[in-house]
Image 1 (cartoon, rainbow over the protein chains, first blue to last red):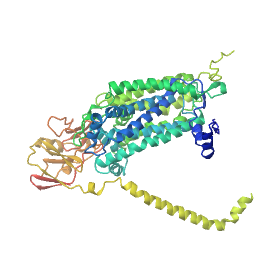
Image 2 (cartoon, each protein chain N blue to C red):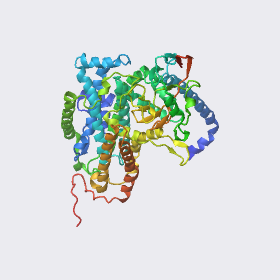
Image 3 (cartoon, helix red, strand yellow):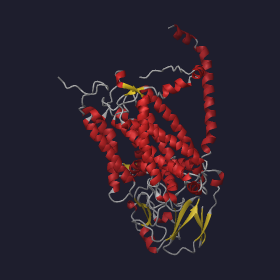
Length: 423
Length: 184
């Protein structure tokens, strides 16, 4: 565990300030650029800082867009088009913000999968993991509300479908939906409040990110071997070693980001959102942004009621069950530290877990594809199987693996990673 | 040990203090909830939103077998001039086949069975089903089809297949005369 270190700045002015307000020590203790860090972090460890950078890109570009955007149903679409055509570099900043959301999710999804593979959720990092999931939930809410703001067809109908999820709640569902809308349909009051919250939530995310980094500082970084740091020989200072590695990763990541930004800025979007919102016409197919597709597939996969067999009594209607399944898909991750009780953290030393990890990744890809298809023919069946497998992975496979899997011998230390053959 | 004894001995005096604590905290809590309510209720529909008037629709232009869409309270309303065959189809369905059991007669006004008036919002997740305009997919039961998640409605606007739990809602409406309908 990291200890609280008193920073004694060498600079006189800084020392003077530190005596009166120990802010340098606070920042150093929470973020800890000098922190000793495991020496064996691979490139999968880059995606945390990349996500942080994308958060900054989104906040800066978003603040600028808010200076030109009008949150009113009559003017929102036109104000976005004005940003695209008339505002100096408006096209660049808006494309940066729209594609930035996608790249933020790319970084975060890889970051989460890294955590799943290397067991980053296991003791003593449970709180660190759960704070990350809170960030993920906040990001989804923020991205959803941001997508509504241009007031195109997908904005309007996406907002309608997602807010209607809450109508599945028994008894109070419809009142909650009216409360969310501020009317009897998605309309101007809805757009106004979404704009307000879309501006607020990124700063809430920033706050939770600080807690997330602090929790990482307290429980130390994990590492690809998943074993604890034994001595200083296992560590190197974060700066300059990982600052340089992160900077290199960021250059590569931003190069790919730039490729989308400048050469295919609409590849990840939906053309229907360039049609102004029309409450009387639902688009042929409502498709969420790609990063929501697996959860959308889970929502749609459930088309059967749960009731008492051989009677008409319905206990949980299909609509509510679908909504429960979708939220449960994320809630289950909060319980992951207690579902996977295997003492070995890293998938590197878990030969069976490794297979199932990749099955889960394939399952997520399949669900992403299903989420983008019309619910016809074979797709709902595949969606249902994919949903069942998703939950089976966390609720059945992981607990059983922890019991029956024969793990490989762990290395002695990070500095001495080669396991000596038994003599 | 002495501290425990002291607490017991001091119980008489602490009771009054405890009471004040509980009373003050309780009242403060009530105050906090009351202060929070305006901030929650401001999200509900405002007075001007609630004051949305009724809508009058001229039915004379809708031929038999045709349907139109009108806006009411920001929502689409489907008005369908049904053919005798469509009414017959809706009336001949066995109730046991229905998800949300309602007879056709319950969903239209007596003597005006040719007019079906329903809210054009899918009861699944709020999309507008297609099937009102000519050439649109009317679904497997000749009524409406919701393209979002594949719900099929019949010629009485009842859910027959797909994830939607309920029939299309019937709004409050009245015939002012043979060709004028008032919604709301």
